[in-house]
Every structure is written in structure tokens, then in C-alpha cells.
Image (spheres, one colour):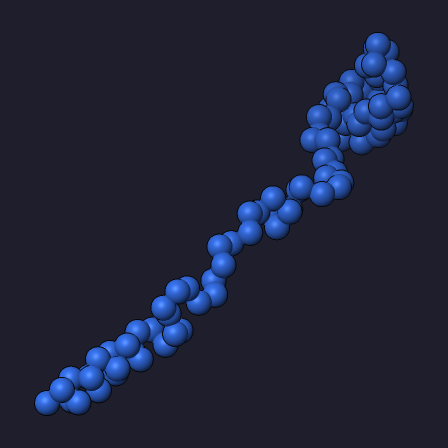
Length: 90
């Protein structure tokens, strides 16, 4: 059975009442006898299991290793080899 929270309009007393879904709402405040109203709150959400974290559903990144013909120096080595080759041709 759900637990409903009420607040009295007259004295602002808050109280909880365990009621079935088809039960009528409370009509009297237990403290002052005033008219209470049902307080609506958001229901808690609990995520259990895998798949709820960004790392669970993320695809693996492409291989960041060296590709064919790359030395990992940002192209500096290739420029240096070309310069050495030109110097030898002279």
C-alpha cells in the first residue's frame, strides 16, 4: 500500500497516511481538525544493473595507434628525410 503525505491548510501540520489506492482521502487534520490536502511529490527512481552509465553504452574508440607510414612524430621525420635526399642530389 502506498503512503500519502498530507498538509493541513490551517496549521500547516504535515503527516503521512498509509492508504490503499481506492481509499478516500483524509478529510480532517489530526492536530487541529482543519482540512488537509495531499502533497504530491516526485517518485524516487533507482537505476540498477548495467547500461545506465555513459561508459556502459559507449562504443570503443577507433585504434589511436600508428597507422601505415606514420612515425608518430607529426610528419617531421618525413620532411627531414626529404631535405637530406635533396642535399645528397646536389
